[in-house]
Image (cartoon, rainbow over all chains, first blue to last red; front, side, top):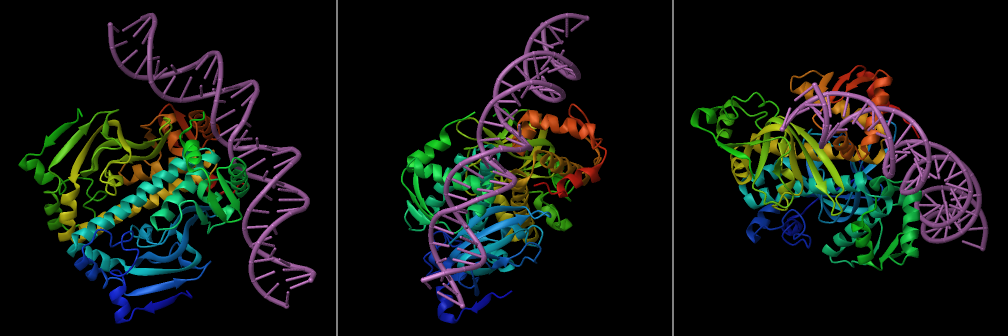
Amino acid sequence: MHAKLIPLSVPELREACSQCNLRELCLPMGLSGGEIDQLDHLVEVRRRIQRGQHLYRGGEVFEAIYAIKTGFFKTDVLLEDGREQVTGFQMAGEILGMDGIGSEKHTCNAVALEDSEVCVIPFADLELYSREISALQHHFHKMMSREIVRDHGVMMLLGVMRAEERLAAFLLNLSQRFTARGYSPTEFNLRMTRGEIGSYLGLKLETVSRAFSRFNEEGLISVHQKHIQIRDAAGLKKLLSERRT
Amino acid sequence: MHAKLIPLSVPELREACSQCNLRELCLPMGLSGGEIDQLDHLVEVRRRIQRGQHLYRGGEVFEAIYAIKTGFFKTDVLLEDGREQVTGFQMAGEILGMDGIGSEKHTCNAVALEDSEVCVIPFADLELYSREISALQHHFHKMMSREIVRDHGVMMLLGVMRAEERLAAFLLNLSQRFTARGYSPTEFNLRMTRGEIGSYLGLKLETVSRAFSRFNEEGLISVHQKHIQIRDAAGLKKLLSERRT
DNA sequence: GGGCCACGTTGACGCAGATCAAAGCCCCCA
DNA sequence: TGGGGGCTTTGATCTGCGTCAACGTGGCCC
């Protein structure tokens, strides 16, 4: 592992969660000021991950979950024959690693899609603090539960939607998450390749590319490489609610 | 709701978890005898659900999770246009309802596929006990995490596998879960229809039926309606590891 | 015990998306 | 400034699964 560990000095530590601009999205959500101060002791280390590097790999011992401070990740699972399923894309304020709790090993790979920084949350400590701070306990449960619900949404994508519906749902989801982070709802850069989008959506990269082109022609979005502008969000939503077949 | 509530009388209550033959699979797993005795107070009510009835529906207020004592369930999510994605099949010892924690509402439907009985675990109480009993806390986290991992497995099915691989994976998974419950690994009755299997696997019922027929012809299994006998588990596994494409 | 109904099987055909192939574009580095 | 590599686009063709349709089967109720 080439990742740098960054022990937090005291002043930084005080800033860890209580001063973080993601605290309304991330683990501290809903905690009182005093409780957040306690949380600051939970995150004693941050880790920088360069684009293309792994935060963790399937099979490694699970010890901590990670809150993304900056950057962008994908998680994926590999079949023995090399086929890849991207199980999610994660951005600032989201939590990585909850898959590892059950077996005490990570069960997927987490790869940075841009230079990123994560807060390391030792899981034993999180459980300890959770026993003291019931708001933290409850919020952590919510985050795990939402992960399950998110996964159900992906199953829906993969199980019943057609290619263009999947892509529309994907774009709307990204847009909404960027919005929640204070970025433009209509304009953003994709951090992942067409192939990775395809793997996530259960499509081949050519199909993803064609669907982008089609949306472009129809004036729903404009695409230039990784730059996306959503021109007709309502039109994209309509794609989703229109039954075909 | 027509479901019967069964307040447990004192002797039954003593039996709730500590005497349950599922305690090695279910929530009490890994708890010491004394801790299980404490757990007995957590489950004060059981509920009977007849075949075809809902344990809960998407949108209902979330208050409890459910441990399946006997029976068999499916969970599903519906799109506005009526398309259904079955997100899972659950059997004795498994937990239902964790999807509801995040939003305080259930986000899917849980339907009994045979007459069933569940232990009602009020979620606020579970969190309360979890703060006292760290083994319970940890095990609950494991169960949620495993749910996430299970979902990743389904994404893999849906995203990258071909029809016969999906069905083979499905049968092997059922077989393994029946085995863990002390039933035959090679012979069992399906509780769900071809259509429900199809919805789970992202296939149409005709495709499921054809795949069953094909497995039958090839001597991998024998099928008679809902009765399945696995004749060549290794052959099924081979289907999964053989790369095609 | 006969008929109905939900479920399952099988066949013929069609199509969405995969596959194969060939360019194009962008960025980085020499 | 040019060239190489990774990513993307686009076209032509193929195919696995969906769709449509007809028939089979078993269980249940009157």
